[in-house]
Amino acid sequence: MLDFDANYDLELDDEELQKVSTTIFESLADYNYFQLVTADGEDIVMNQPARLIASYEQDRLIVLFESEPKDLLKLTGKVDFGVYDPTFYVAIDFVKDDSLAVEELPTRCARAVIRPDPNQAITDNQDNLTEEFFNDPAGTDISKIFATRLELSCAAKG
Image (cartoon, rainbow, N blue to C red; front, side, top):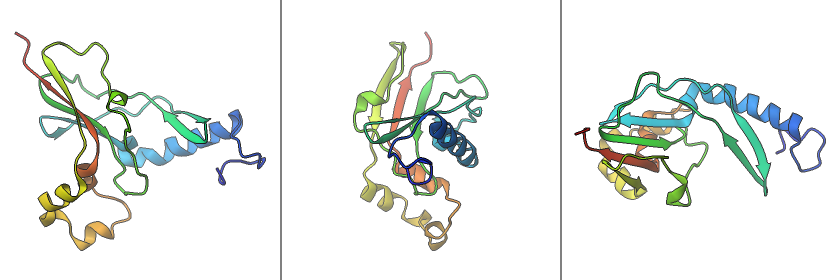
């Protein structure tokens, strides 16, 4: 709010929100827009979103964008979707499981929201948590282990 409320009215008007959108859009490009998409454990390359929309509602900044995989993503095996900040600067979570949704999910797919327990994630990944990780301002992929995600388990088409 302090960085973008140019008229100091404690609101973000359309022009101020456009500046927020532009700043976030440009900043998040370096971090793949905080996207976590994997298929059977392999990272999926996502296209850059065409645009980003910011709104300010009930004292909350809401940022929306759509993106799609660079290549066709088949719904077979295990496919994960999540949002995380590799720098640990922004805390991101989904309060309600229904906030992670897929429209028209095929019946051959099961849906589960995965909320990793932070203590267990640290224990399971102790060998990867080094001093360099905690001091790397650019972030690392290890922060994915803490990300809430939507997991789809899909059988092959029969």
